[in-house]
Amino acid sequence: MGFLDQISKTLTQGVDRAKFEADKFQKTTRLQGEVNEFRRQVDMKLMELGQRAYDLQRAGQISAPSITELAAAVDQLRSTLVMKEEELKVSQNDVFEEPMTPAGVAPSQQVPIAYDTPPAAPPAAPPAAGLKACASCGFQMPATAMFCPSCGTRTA
Ligand SMILES: [Zn+2]
Image (cartoon, rainbow, N blue to C red):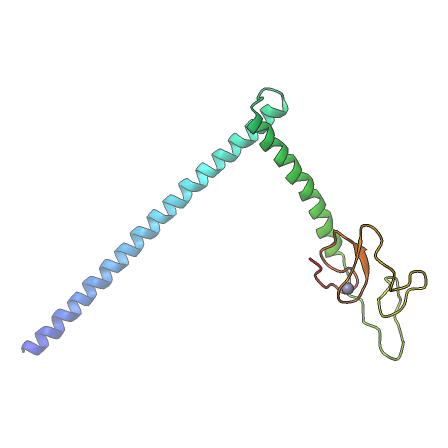
């Protein structure tokens, strides 16, 4: 009997333990949710405050240098954002160019491809100012380009 009692007791403890863990999980999950919600509300109010401070600074009603600096940083980031959005649009409109077959049956060719020597510029020419060559295919692209427009290799 002692043995069975032992098992029974162990099982009961197991159930208590499981219930405890389940309750604890439920409670911590609820509290974590509340903490996250309050954090979100604090962040939202800070954003509102920031927007308000930005507007007041632009209206000339706040002259604190730190606010001026932050407002300028926001303007800078926004103009970079506009550029990146343009870059994204261009990237989204990129279409895949079929690679040329060795037989030389080239499809319509609008973008010069490196191993097909372009008529005007010799491939060995040093890159013009503001341009860089793709490490993979040699395509000349703006120095600011992050991906080769010809072959898609990442350049940065
Ligand atoms: Zn390339």
